[in-house]
Amino acid sequence: MGIIEIENLKIYYKTVKGYVKAVENVSFNIEKGETMGLVGESGCGKTTIGMSIMRLLPRNAKIIGGKIIFEGEDLIKKREEEMEKIRWKEISMIFQAAMNALNPVYKIENQILEAIYAHENISKKEAVERVSRLYSLVGIDPRRAKEYPHEYSGGMKQRAVIAMALACNPKFIIADEPTTALDVMVQDQIISEIKEIQKKLQMTMMYISHDISVIAETCKRIGVMYAGGIVEYADAIPLFKKPLHPYTKALMNSFPSIKGEKKKLTPVPGEPPNLLNPPSGCRFHPRCSKAKSLCRKKAPKFVEYQHRHFVACHYVG
Amino acid sequence: MKLIEVTDLKKYFPVRKGIFSKSDKYVHAVDGINFSVEEGKILGLAGESGCGKTTVSKLLVRLLEPTNGKILLEGEDIAHKKGKKLKEFRKKMQMIFQDPYGSLNPRFTVMDTVAEPLIIQGIGTPEEREDAVAKALDIVGLKSPEEFLFRYPHELSGGQRQRVAIARALVIEPKFVAADEPVSMLDVSIRLGVMNLMLELRDRLNLTIVFVTHDLACARYMSDEIAIMYLGEIVEIAPTEELINNPKHPYTKALLSSVPIPDPSEKRKRIEVKGRVSTPIDPPHGCRFAPRCPHVTAKCKKKDPHNVRVSDKHLVACHSFKS
Ligand SMILES: Nc1ncnc2c1ncn2[C@@H]1O[C@H](COP(=O)(O)OP(=O)(O)OP(=O)(O)O)[C@@H](O)[C@H]1O
Ligand SMILES: Nc1ncnc2c1ncn2[C@@H]1O[C@H](COP(=O)(O)OP(=O)(O)OP(=O)(O)O)[C@@H](O)[C@H]1O
Ligand SMILES: [Mg+2]
Ligand SMILES: [Mg+2]
Image (tube, rainbow over all chains, first blue to last red; front, side, top):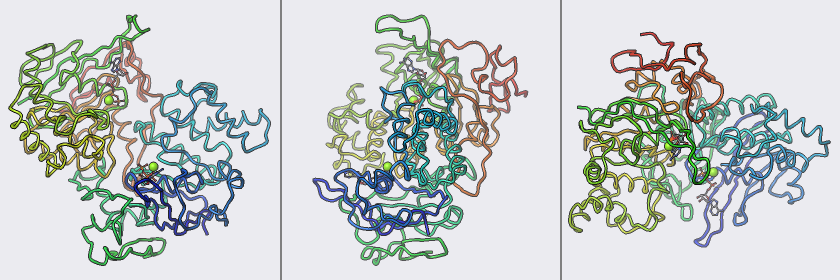
């Protein structure tokens, strides 16, 4: 049993042009202490899944069906007051581009303290000590906590945002592109710190990124998303050794690397689909070289093809 | 043949104190760099944010005038050319900008955007220009140009916008293109398509390209040679595979060691360096990487390192390297 179990999750956004079918029948488990990576191209629904677990979806989003079971209870059924006790305290999230969301008029320390006071009844002294510990944990000198966001570099702001997400010792943390837009060396430092913290605090994590190299380095288990669905879910090493879904194969072939032979890479042909009017059957079929008529007609089931290796494709292998 | 060659290229920006007063301090954005690119080759220019990559690109196509140094385009120095003489050279060189969202005028149709360099140069009749635009769009893979000609930027996807920006750069058939992070803002699914397009155009049109990127994996994929910049200086330059497999400068080594590898069974050895990139405002003597270098010695802080030859085409600027 996982700490988080998602079953047949389906989320649509209502727009003037119709429904954006952003998440379609997504199911996966994350075991306690595990880091799960969610990877896929822009617009495939990664953030939508993260936000639904936090129950922070925008107003025009509608959960059409499915379950989000956290420690045995369905979060979708919870009232907002109940969610307020869980959000940030039990489940926390580092938002995409969050470093730009720090409030520029408050000292960073005060912003973190506020997050702590909102959930815990502790003395100022204890809270300030915790901020100081969090700062050391994410690799910033605690003396700099009293500064304003503009006095920080991009990498430091991102670390502060991570510290804030950790403020109430959550059991489960969702990191949405926590290092995108940072320089490689800074990205690398932050990734290795996140990994260490995760180990030290025994946290469960969902790591969202479009960059398959970053996911390969941080996650033990990986879900590959395409156009609102998870097409493959497996442990990192077997997934990279023997990807089963044609999209996973194509995605892995579109990232240059500094290791190994230099070879010509070929991008996934065609354009990403429009989720207002997604392709029938398997959503990947218009771009798939293996597609047959069945793929156009029927959506493939998401099945455990090998032990712990799930895939949604009519013609696996 | 060397298509472009720069020697001791410098660009200093005055540091502003207030709106009207300039201080006597300068940012040494580009501080004495040397390199050349053979015709039909691609040089990758890589380094962290603020190291001067964009400034170099703008200097190369003379959107900026250098503070010092030479820029030889087909043997002729264009470093300080002005007015009509400079306009002559603009036909031979173009720049592609980082941001496909910001670099296209939102009120221009694709036709207007791509035709603009022709109009500025006074090339062709309106009909000839339309043909040239259609041809350029076709070259960048926007087949059936009539479908795109009268669209506005907001009616295009990110990949299509960057293709339009490339078409605009190619429409006057330049010999040289400075591409400033042309794929950084693009989603992975279209990034590779744009890179392959540039490689193909190089082959077909014998274009010479300086390809700016902060992503070393992309630099490797695109380039024949790679130059690594740090705070306004080139610290190492070498043929691509030589630089990737046999780096000599401590900064190049650290940078390479922090690139994530798309293979979970690969264990990477990280080289940790302290601190972060600063701004080169009137930098003191000595190696600019010295404050962060794991191998720093007293000499590094006093004396600027000169280029040392590792092999024929591999140069490194580091005191600790002895050839
Ligand atoms: N508030 C909204 N209203 C309507 N459509 C939306 C809304 N938010 C997201 N979408 C659409 O839902 C789909 C999934 O979006 P989501 O933000 O989850 O993607 P993502 O995988 O996180 O992408 P990225 O990598 O670009 O962050 C996209 O097609 C997007 O355009
Ligand atoms: N017009 C200007 N006036 C003053 N300083 C400038 C100007 N343009 C650039 N600089 C400074 O010159 C240095 C180099 O900037 P440049 O934009 O060339 O870097 P870059 O390598 O392209 O960075 P990035 O990866 O962030 O795009 C920086 O310190 C920058 O702040
Ligand atoms: Mg997102
Ligand atoms: Mg730049």
